[in-house]
Length: 102
Image 1 (tube, one colour):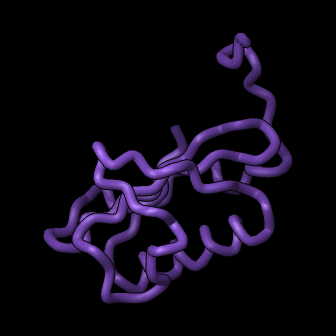
Image 2 (cartoon, one colour):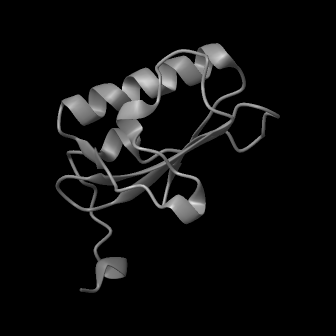
């Protein structure tokens, strides 16, 4: 209820709590691969896509190029409920491409 006061580290997702920016396709490939592994291991689950935010099902995101012009997916820790976002503008590039804890 008062999650703002519950700042304890979650043993399940603590390794994912740092923002990770990517600068090139090789780094994005590695990031997507590590997120897919975290999903497969049950650390996080992809949230349902929101069409208003141009999200797609994470299982449709390719590990390697070619990617869609925009990758936007949200995830939730299976234990503490912390949320994360994967964002990449693969068409124009962006200094915000990467993994973002919310």
